[in-house]
Length: 402
Ligand SMILES: Cc1ncc(COP(=O)(O)O)c(C=O)c1O
Image 1 (cartoon, rainbow, N blue to C red):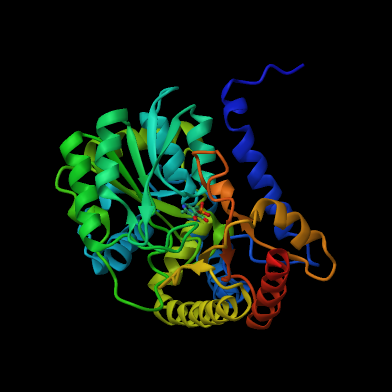
Image 2: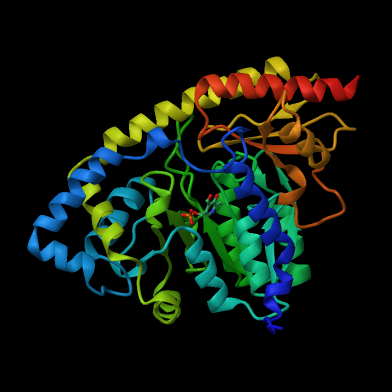
């Protein structure tokens, strides 16, 4: 028998949930509001074909793409992060402090490598993104939930729990949060940054949805309020370019960046060169603004149809969020509906065949918290299917209340 490391046991439950989710996503007979993947129409296939051909024709770039590369990432892509993605959002920083990572999840993994010993506490939002919890549990961290309301994580509860648990890290998804679609208010962003500085705690700001805003106005990231270097900003190219390319980035102060360099080098040397170069060329050739507008228009339409359909077909007493961006809404159903139990029926019943993610999976507290909630992802589903799926799901829920 293989003698697996202890960490493989601590992450078993969260890993099983994620495996199940990917299974439902790939069943073609199901209308899936489950996964968080971008729409296939949002993938810039023709542009990438043109760029890839060019890269392989330009001798220097071809060699660069297929050779080993720098640990911190391709210089032009790092400059794009600084000048095109962060500066317009109010974050001024040096290229030296930006590392290109393999997807948006890698910064979370690397930060755990830097900070987490078995038994350390990480404060997370309630609810939070289960994939990150899987990583935290792999490092044998203890996740403690902090209250959230419609304006995001509640700073008063955060301060109480920082004092009580002395966490190593606070993990926050401030914009169009996964799973709720909620956005942390500006005032709270400042407070969260201040709490990190005051109590010498790392604030890990995970912000992969911020660039898909299709209504309302931009808010400064938590990092913009950080005066002491306690906030580390992680982001991803998955939702604005392509998730299969596995590209993300992390911005940290000099001291943390030096450690990230060591951890990244020991983990995988550097992020794959070909996707980095394709992505850099995508921005440098000026494709991003039109592409960005196209995806925002597409997701706004889907959000509107989903919200309209929930309001029409879900039972009275349902509460749902209204996201100004991102891919998800979150519905809280009237008491008495258990969304974990309902999921088996909604996917198994041939008259329904609709998937979502049951709310319970996003709560680290256990005890059935969130068992009347569901995360509904509209980003990857065509408008007509959103209407049909939401109607079928709504009718099934209503039938349970009778
Ligand atoms: C909150 C959050 N963080 C990180 C990620 C990971 O992004 P990536 O696919 O780039 O690894 C996701 C992806 O869905 C996410 O929702």
